[in-house]
Length: 99
Image 1 (cartoon, rainbow, N blue to C red):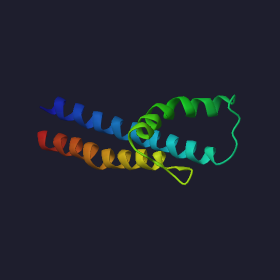
Image 2: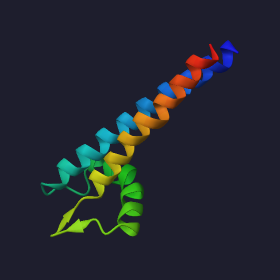
Image 3: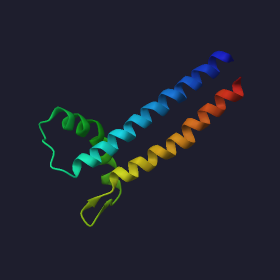
């Protein structure tokens, strides 16, 4: 039982770190979009390649452009915050109950 509890706790920790890193990548991409970034810069290309698949799906299903402002990063950040507060915390509590 301890092994399963530790495994669930480890999964929760890794998921929390991955969601946190992805949230910061979304924030950095949103900040970079305010200036005119060089599309050939490797950092800009990396940020675009990592974040665009998720942002594209949000833009496809929700009308998230108001007055020329794209709010899809805000929607994705809110989903990440929800996942961190609900899913990660639920996994931590499940691991504690198994101990």
